[in-house]
Length: 349
Image 1 (cartoon, rainbow, N blue to C red):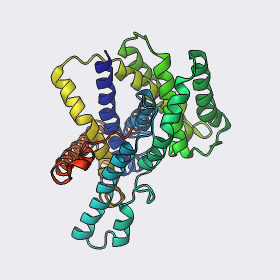
Image 2 (image 1 turned 120 degrees about the horizontal axis):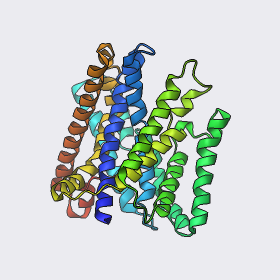
Image 3 (image 1 turned 135 degrees about the horizontal axis):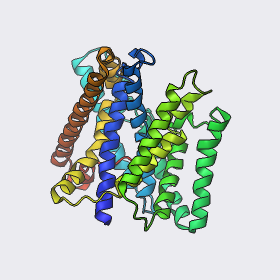
Image 4 (image 1 turned 120 degrees about the vertical axis):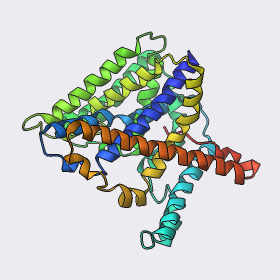
């Protein structure tokens, strides 16, 4: 059962990264801005957006759900940094060579330090979380079940429900784009892991809960006149988005994956998801290749638009996975044995 649950979580990592790519195709690709308001295309576009918006919360929650180490890992930090720096500087250099004027040598130098240069917001926030994760794990392990319930209620109430009730960002979470929110997700994931031990509920219940949360998010988005600060329902800190992420984590955890071949493929492909993120959100790729690239999809009938969004996201996901697979082989070939650990792809989240 432990192996099945871990494989389910690995599968969730893949699905969540695919959902992230869908978000970026819709948003940075220019589709959502081009949709005529309150039309079938608009409704379907925002339904896809709402269905995928919980992906980042899934990654943060999984970090706490699978956490077991009470020791800070230098190798973990170095491995993640090396992989991020490889893509950050490498992609910038490629653009400099093949598209002169797209970037500068100073930018390439800054890209060698992806954290201080803030090349990737999630990686920067997650890198900081790595330093606190062992202490958060110790905190969770020191609590009894009653205290865990109180902690879960406190973090959700203070950082999720209270800002929504107030209608503004009370604690400077910036809609969830901060290390503080990743720490909150880490604690939520850890609390849920402790509280759900021994649970036998079928995955369908959790996936039903996910759909309900998505429908509530879409409903608020489409209300005539809309609620005051209705945008707070479509953010990483939204209770419906957090609830959708929680249901997906529990649903995928409960999946019973028995096919040895499928288990092998999941174990092999899931770690490559981090490379997909690093490649397609690279600042130069983001601004030159993705910005407004798929705006024409918004003029198509709703089913065709949705199909092209999903196919485009799948193509980006597969291409990024293939590139990271080659990156792994390259590291294994050129790095001395002492640094072979860098060749193993890393899970960010």
